[in-house]
Length: 385
Image (cartoon, rainbow, N blue to C red; front, side, top):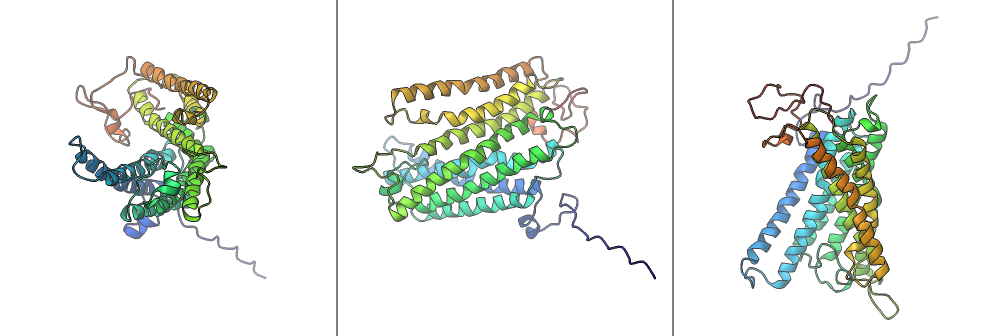
């Protein structure tokens, strides 16, 4: 009796990368490659950058004369608000993590891709859906509440298209949450063998701190704006002052995010600076562990300083004193970074040519160069961090 043939293993599709990816619009819209998704984000945030730039240009033209001659005061308020919404929520916040983080984090830790490639693509589509709601609000009357959505102006009294805008920002928040989750899981579980925590590039440390804020902070601003939208639609009275309600000039949780999201952006931006500084010195970055710890400290303390936006809203003297102290405290880890950067640059090979122009080329360009030019290759014995 003949032996049964062994089962044929099921063929699995190879991981998509730049070697086997196809071309065409469909391949880009359905891609799960982190580098392509980073480029999709780059194109999207650039569109919102130019939209916000158009509003800013109109504002500056209007202010050419002291009295303003281009638009009415009501339209000026709308231009100012729409510029802020486009730049803050759809350019400034997602630009560094979603573009540079998506592209570089897997490459820097030796991973093939992010931990959840399909969720990474989903986050981009969520970003587009949120952006579509906001653009709809721009085209159907605009916004005049300011990008901070002060209540009760935004929740009760404004006649502009606030509801689709806050829904769009609420949807866009899920994009940030998924991106931060992807980064944290990737850094925890997909580092190359030998890539311990204190061998991670400082760029990765900065984005790790950023991701913590994206996961913990974004839900707060998202649910607060959702409450604003619900109050406008159903008159639930979350922020409306009345005889038995304490007036709220601005939802305090919103300011947690206004401070924290700014901090997280500073943290992720610091990562690029740290890489540049270490490239200009023959040895590794000085004070590596202190800089890594300061990135986490900035993210953590940044959650505790939000009331420094509310000194003029009637908060108590003791609250103002406490948050003033915490606001000074967050400057300490920032100063740690600056002192370590200065020490790293001391006796370094500094050139007027921007070294970060060589990003992505430092392993491809020959080491020889004309006198005075910056090489895109590290010197012998130099370790990138």
